[in-house]
Image 1 (spheres, rainbow, N blue to C red):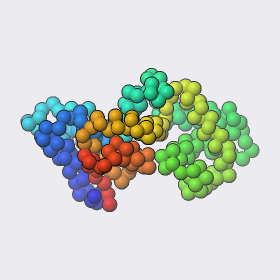
Image 2: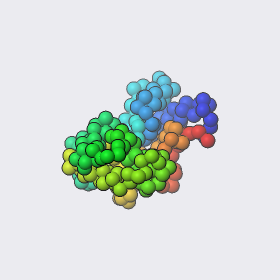
Image 3: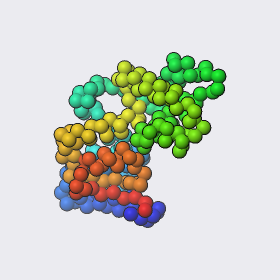
Image 4: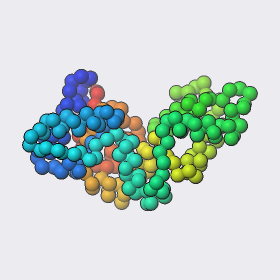
Length: 230
């Protein structure tokens, strides 16, 4: 734990390099970051530190929480009732689907303007990632939309049903499904056993789902290294 600019990420990269030099197989390490660029940078730094001792090291399990979630969901898709070929909606696609559902439910034609598609997506995303009740989410973060709580509940339910029908997930679903998978004792143990070490950058940015996923990966905390702001 340390403040900004003190070298936390560099420390984590050196930790990865030290494990590699100690003989830990790269595929036994799970490195989680919050952006694709950060994942690439972490891999680059570790490879540079290791240098000549271990050329061409590939950290095959280095990526964002969402990208790693996508890989696990595809791997275990049949066990969780999804087609392996499920599609992933980006933010634009998800907002457009909300717009379609808004129109279908007649909410876009209400006398008083209903929240726009991007706002609906923001509310839904915040609700999923914090695991707060919708009423609390609206009161704390979107008070100007609080009057629409019943309609938003219907909208979100229809949105979810449309995704299920289309065998598609949005970005928030990636974490939601991975989190749900980790509630299964056998599956959580199987996934956790793939890794001897789990390393996380910018831990202070983890949301409730991500923090609980990490706890389920390594319940005892052994083999876990995280860095973040105080």
